[in-house]
Image (cartoon, rainbow, N blue to C red; front, top):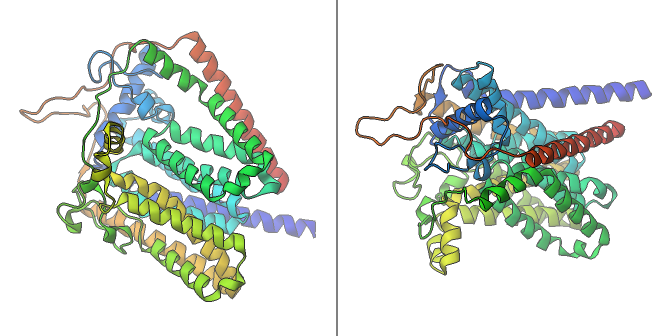
Length: 493
């Protein structure tokens, strides 16, 4: 009997791996071409990679600003748009891979990390392999993520989305699952660390919704074990990022930042139309001010019809068969629904951002730094992916395994189809560019002011021995924690 059980588990594990690889392939389809889709920030991302490559060649592994960007002091995108994961394409560039290919290979790795990482997180939350795979499908093949990946080339936020489900898993383990609480601190600290080192705005949004979740489960704060886990998560977060924080403090101390104060910039007209949130078919648009020229000229940003279906199914099951589901099950569903709807509201042009901006000088600066309200849709994406998984579990409970699996497959298929339709539309109608080896990434048009082309020369302020020591300690700690998690996972098998 043990052999049969082991064989069955091996078959399930193969199915999960194949499923995640299929999601990676489908999300990466536009990368199997000889061109790149011309996302809004594509040029900036390619310049960042080559700037880091030049810095590695001339000054070693450092975290400081690149000197030729924005005045002599440099533009510190290593802090505000983390460089940590861009070392991968930078090393590919150093190995002789051209700009275009290194970027494409890196995006394939990002898609794979999103598929496998979100599967692991959703599996931890729901303690079921196929629910985890469903969550991965809804999350990886979401309209919003495809929009960021190809229409915007918003690399920082796309990388941050890899770690957002880790934060969710850490929260659920700490606040909801007493028997598995001892590993919650690790999931939470790794999740927050990854988001911080990818995209500072995403870190702020994640922290905001973390506080909202804490308020929902405030009763759990009465338990000493919860405070212990939160304390361990904070301590681990500081240790994981001690080199990053040290570098930032040193850079502030020497006055190296060049920061252009942003205040009083209205952002409300850059919110999405409500109709864009849950459309069935998204097409390649190009207007960044989503409320000005109507939906036809708007960028293809939203969440997709699949999440509207999940909301409708949840409401139907709760209001018609609510007595058949447990209190905790309903609370989790309403929490996901509430946070998702609130995040959607923040992302639309209906939320009075311009009114909030006028409250004080502080709110004027904070609102202006958001740049575009649609960034809040990342929280909605996570919340509604959770809701989709919850409705799948509820359907299994109410209608049995056969109909439950049909619903789960249908939900995943709807999400994949919607995202694939957008990908095909982008490939047909979106602008593209070919960047060959040896070509300049930035070629200004006649009469147009030139941007700095690649960083060159030594870093403005090279890292010291303390930074290297802290980096080594941080990496070793992270590796130890990773090995511990993998060993625990093998023991569970």
